[in-house]
Figure 1 (cartoon, rainbow, N blue to C red):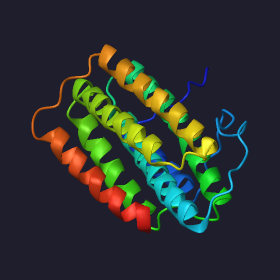
Figure 2: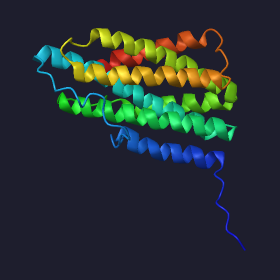
Figure 3: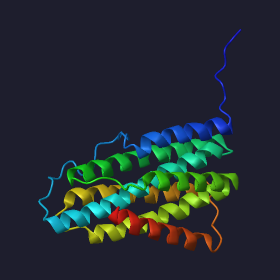
Length: 215
């Protein structure tokens, strides 16, 4: 008699995602890739520039907390195993981003947003809802999310102090990864999200940025 590996139910996957949440919000992310900022020296920043840079990197760290939650929620209810595998692979790269941003915040003697558990819970719920609508809509949500994040990172690259090549290298690599995630999700059949969903997503992201920059 042969033992077969137990197939995880949707509930099992949701519970596993929530367990991963504890590691995410506790700052336990470990990158599989070295930080793109590592080859660049830690810049000397005055107090104002350091606070501004920390605020920007805190926004990006919170964005990666949200990305982990979204992908975990979507993967938990993905119907096609290939879609689930894609989402889990993308989430692994987002873990790199999370770890890189956390490391840069520590170098700036700062920390992630105090509201990260709230951001995670809300984003996980959104990911579950997107996946419940079907894989095409879930993938479409990835496309829209990543395109908005790609544009946001481009703006932060313009806002960072010119001397901070270390943070700039991190965000540039993240931006390239997000663009690739969007392209892959589109190629897998991601549906175009109807109005007003993209606008609502931008509004929610704007609120998160305002709060995370400060707290």
